[in-house]
Image 1: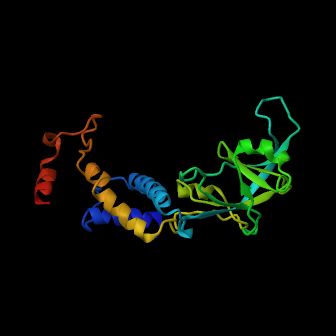
Image 2: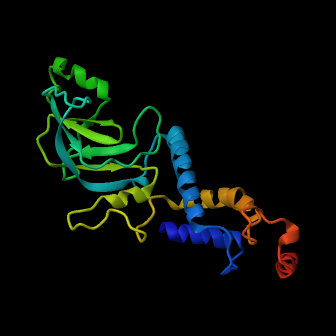
Image 3: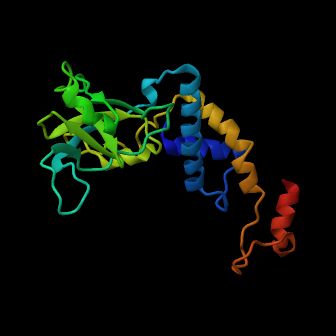
Length: 235
């Protein structure tokens, strides 16, 4: 299912299948809450089971790298080069003690690079056996790669906002995510999100009066047109 299908199905379920041209609940707000619930449920499921299903994962395809100096100060170079992603990597769902980046590796998607903490880079020279191996780490949403001379890597992960993957493209310059892409979430989570929102956010939104009189304040029940009040009584 796409995000649009999930959002409209949720709204139709709340409205009992009756659609209206005067719907006051924003589809964009429903989509935002779906992504919020998705992140919460993924974190809870991982904390309970420690498993990540492939249906939650998104592939960012080829991540372009650029050579940079590791100095954070303007005008000061350390002659300590590394490769950094040109674009920011989308923020991931918060797991216990780790990033929800499931794979960083070569462009085949098969050779995995070890993901380490930034401070561990200082100790690599003392690592006799694996110090020269390719390592990856994150700083401020940028991916850094050391001990690798390449222009591209492949990255997969479970991202807070799946639509952020649309900023990345594949080899045919097609976006990695579109409005018609399957939303990265298994069907059992769709049911849980639908139930949670119908009993929570949607009920609250439906009970809030709109500002039809354009006076920058919510309308009271007395200011609702008489025909709308009669319709509400019939419902």
